Image (cartoon, rainbow over all chains, first blue to last red; front, side):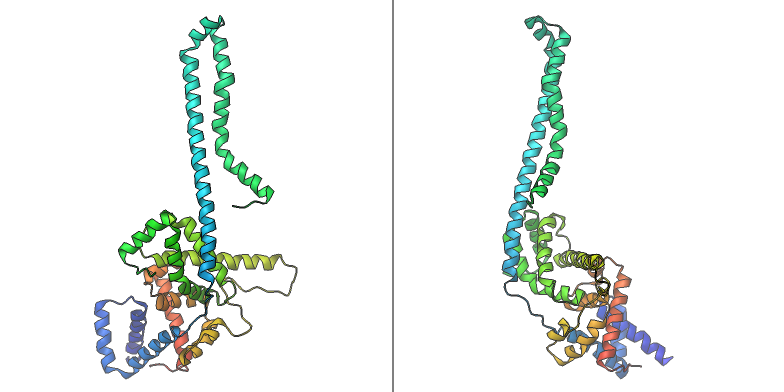
Amino acid sequence: MQTDRHQSICHMIDKSLAGEISVQEEQSLRLHLSACAACQQYLNASNRVIAGLGGFAFETDPGLPDKVFAALKIRAAQLETQRLSHRQLAWSYVAALILTLAGSFVAMQLSDRFANTFSITHQQVQLGLIAIWIVPSVCFCLLLPTLPLVSKRWMHAKGISL
Amino acid sequence: MTLAVTESDTERIARGLRHRDVALLHALVQQYQYRLVRYFIFLLGSRDPVDDLVQETWLRVLERGHSYDGESRFEPWLFAIARNLAIDHTRKRRMISLDSNDADEHEPAPLTPVSCEASPFEQAARIEDAQHLAQSLQRLQPVVREALALRFQEELSLQEISHVVGASVSTVSSRIYRGLAALRQQMDGGEHAN
């Protein structure tokens, strides 16, 4: 019975050290410890272990922060370059999309006027606009997102790394 | 430059990381250098790969800084990154070992310390109790050693440790109890309060 009580208190000590004890348990623990030498000894042994863990002093390379900082500066510059190229890509995509929409608009709205001016059929104007304007800009729109992948593969093939 | 980690500082760190503020990172590198080295040694039980892993950790912090929200403390987030890198490192070592033709070469299980000479703990023991602990620490499971380091050296709460190691709070506390029991036994020669 007494052993069970001690085991329960020892568990409470472990919980207290791990930082998961309630205020009530803490009070009960303090009360018990003030009257029980065996459990106090257990607590002291645990405290010695924790103090021992703090007794380790590891050597660190004094040049390590500078080395890390140099690597960070290089990587930050690379990331900034990547960010800018992504932004350029996004703007190119927007421009291609606007061209596509504008081409479609022109094809729909102004094909009659072109047909009359150049004495050609309405269909011929539309086909011409589709061939020289809309199809290329749609292809450009579709291919733009693949550019980073292509450029990464090209850089990898050339042995260049970001 | 020292950054005391109060709530406003965590927000400042989060903002700096979002903007990839290299000056802030420089200050953080200096502030956390020793703690990262110590954590890696406790986790790996070896000193060799630590400097490279520290550098990798900060590069990862730079790249993924936007994912730190500044609402919780910076340390658990930093140690979680460090831990993932340490696991990647041990996996790579295992793969290299499996790829090698040397059949006699056996790599240890992930996160298992490798040491033939004095362990980093033995080298680092400065006081008598620490010297006693050094040998038994090397024999502990790395996850147990890690839990002890995060609780008693880095002073993280159980919830924070649970976040770092990706295990439940009860698993973490159980590792701490096991570690304490093993080390206590070593220190007092097996005597028990009972």
